Image 1: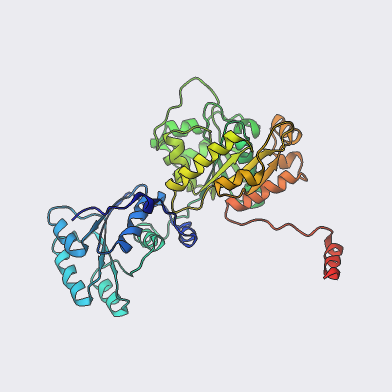
Image 2: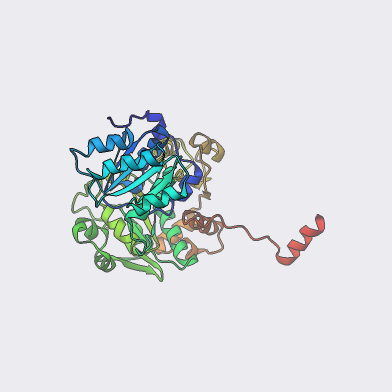
Length: 425
């Protein structure tokens, strides 16, 4: 008996759009151990890929070949995990015979899922009657497997988790934080939903400036006291920026060095997701363990870039890396910012998008007057000039990153405009 061996290109192959959509609502799985014993690679592959999914980060998943007989042999000398997944190509009689052998060496507290090759309702009922947690019929997908694991180990009465959205610049100075803050403000005002912004650039964060805030406490206290962070403590650290918008501000001081472990922000994000429908992460343009982990674990990643060569190189590296880290998620979303800067040679939007294999969800023009005025006054762009087309773009971005889809433009000219179009047809 040996671990399943997979070629690297198989593991990097992205999930299809149907699986990704189905996985969007799956909650992260708690710290459990899972062992699978398969007979075919068609079943072993999705289970192994499930173990690589970001929602399974806390779980430990091992896949073995050999089916139920291999499991019986294995558990004679090893403790059983929280969940055992068994594939069997045998008929009902052979399956029950093998399960009886397994029962002799299996802890009764372990949950067991059987994947069979016979679509038999009577067999399903008999298995459930005998204590099997779930019976699935092959072939199975990663979405099928994640749904079963989630059902078995997550309380159905638990409050839904908020959606985490990470914004990061492909290069410093591309306006990633400004876009992040304005999209967050748009989300809170358009949808009247609670939004929490976490400014993760502790030494140089600008969220407090952009929102004209000067809180005494913020994200530093949350990160350095991660062992005591809970909903009550987090609420004390949040600064109110608007009716539905709260901020975990960065201290923006250099009195200490901000070096963190890869999981330093994980607990904070988990708690924030239990308190608000949307948690927006303003991730600084650095690449280390904790920024990589933050981008890997976020529900949505948005990359902001300017149309020049260094941005293109960095954006491609980030997108390629995140596609490998997040094989069961859609590709990151791309925003091109500061387009049309005077006297700057630029890469055309189409030429920028082609090597990334990714169309930008928004192209925001360079407007020093609008952005500079808003920044200097500590106001959002919509508060500075609500009629500006950039504000409409930010509204569209807010709809897209929250999964609400693109806003359709209203026909110009009102009723007369609509009538004139009808007459021309």
